[in-house]
Image (cartoon, rainbow, N blue to C red; front, side):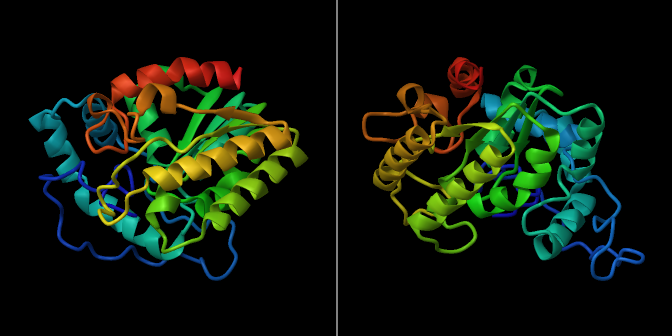
Length: 286
């Protein structure tokens, strides 16, 4: 699911934020026909200071200040133009981290890559001190496992990490890119693990975080399916000799939902949830 924040947050978290009218499309990129060295249009595909401030406010459960909201709204037209371009031309959001990946490659790579969707991306907003040029966050909100697989070479392999932490599956269960089979998620995880092994990158597979509801797919009741998929992920990691980490014991209710005190929407942890996840993650990637 792509939102006005280019997928930064799941539906419902930005209720009440004023959005711009449909923006004019980006102009054609000079010389960009077919295969080119630079397919990404001019503009920032990263997160602006206003976007980061808003995400940080939401991750703590505290309303953003009027100044932050005004700065975010002011950036709306350009943000929406880039989001519209990405939705049409860049299914996997390869432009999102391309420039930063190139910078880190020149510095000799990283130690750990955290790859995932909004739950990983918002981890960076809630606990920015956890991430650095050595432990990098490569989460993109709204993504499914198929998009992570397409990003794997650029956003993981090229950075030469010792370890990759993969946390994905919520949006596969939700069908963000259309209905899919459980086997499709499994195949994408198999493929990412195979690529990582070929490059001698250790893998830590994360269990899909608990969720009893998915706000943007209210017809889905995912807790049972998440349990089944997590049992497979755990067994697969063991069979492959790779790591497995389950944040459920600190986040989940007995019924398989997210603890209400740890989430606004039942899917995304608040800072209190990420604070519980951090030592578990550190132990897993170390």
